[in-house]
Image: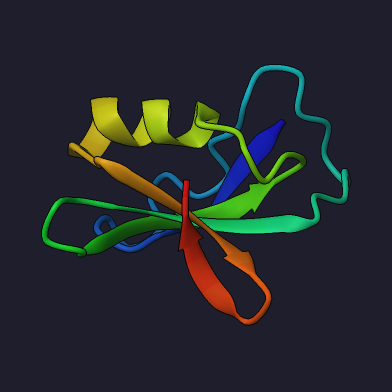
Length: 79
């Protein structure tokens, strides 16, 4: 389960896009960001699984994202 909380390319127009089954008020412990090959970050959000590629599939279709990173131990880690 995941949710986009910041859309950095569309001034938050897609804020709140989420995976099927997401329930408002759900606490998701893993922060992620989606970027392109040049490292430009398009979206940020939260997930219940730090090994999920689900958010990346959304980013690929909507913005051509190619990378997902999760915040782990004080730094962004690539999947």
